Length: 290
Image (cartoon, rainbow, N blue to C red):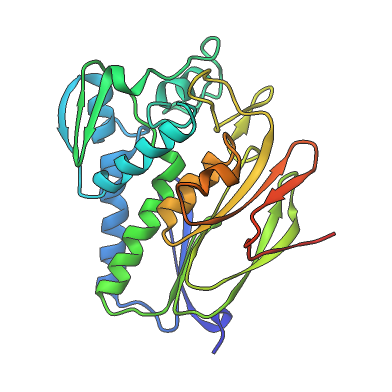
């Protein structure tokens, strides 16, 4: 049986479409558990919900207890904050809102670009406890979807599901499915591919400036030191052992070369630049079309 013959569990969550593919249909109880995990994640981490923990932190400084996944997420962001010289930061929420990517999706800038606050000046992130000295708007979008992929994979594994593919609108994790052929989307034409990759047991995540773009050259990948959209890279792909790491590194590739990131992370990567050129790691598993 090939993956194309497997059953699909389709649903919406955290503002995007999901497809969990398994050899047999998931039991109703497991589907309910998956949806509950998605809802809880959204209630904790969404900056688009007034009732979320993140929104509480944005309204009132203080000490907040976040769920268990906050610990590895904070460690990952802390390392990437240092490696990128502050360009990649979870404190980018206010900068995104300034440019119009706000809870109301106004897509209307409210002023010039706003740099993110210096992490060390406003926030202590210790394990699962976040303590803010001033109101601060978190946005974990650079790693959040991948993190949720990993949480859902843990739900499936705990239920004894050994083979599955989780597709979170292009961010993928395959377990026990054998090689899965994946097309790499052209950054300027979603109907075309620039290559393919065979995914087998790892996570593949992508980031592109053409996704969540609006206005005159505005998009969601902002440099935390300036609050401005990145202009050089247009699309990135990262393969890693977990979707959280792959997702975060796909964003980090907009700020620093993949070779620099490989000094701290075990992953492979591809970056496409605005001039049409590309760079990739020696062990990148994909094949690019000529």
